[in-house]
Length: 207
Image 1 (cartoon, rainbow, N blue to C red):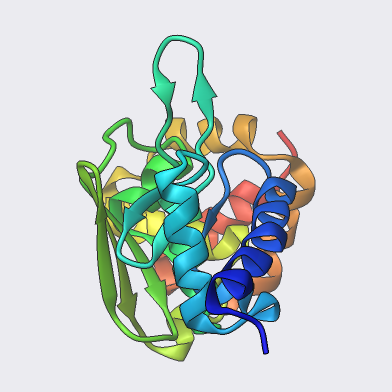
Image 2 (cartoon, rainbow, N blue to C red):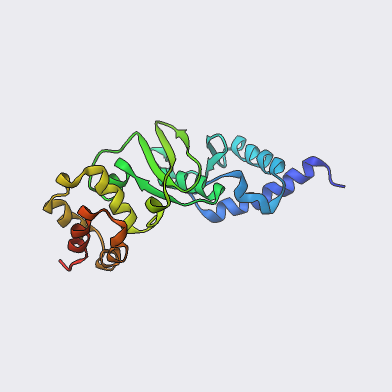
């Protein structure tokens, strides 16, 4: 029977290899490594890697393999990368919403202090540095287009409101988004509120 320290060291090596394989900027949670050992050994291995400065603890149970900038030093991961790590832990889906969705599409220059993601899993939030990432439980209908451009557009348009979806903003989206992706949103037209449907058809047209 192996000594506990030997088990922990044995677990640490494949975890480190997995982290390096994900690349700089990767965000992960302990359950991502269950194939390598039990939860206690994984937690100890991650703690050791944090102490060595290899990885960074962002919040309780959330870590990253930080990207390095020659001037700014370690960079913070995106809110979406953190949200995806939390969703992966819970085996759930996420959909950017609110001001974060509008900012993602370039429809708003404001970077929200709270990044909201709709989810079919439990509501939870985590604060990383100055930003709070919130996963907010919602209805199956709101998640029907999750992970697709149509879902992002629905949430961004809902945040901005009908009166603020101007011809200029539609033109801006047409320039930013590839025509193939714009045409695909028509498949989800029934998931969009009635007032958004003409906007979807307009976006799907060639410039």
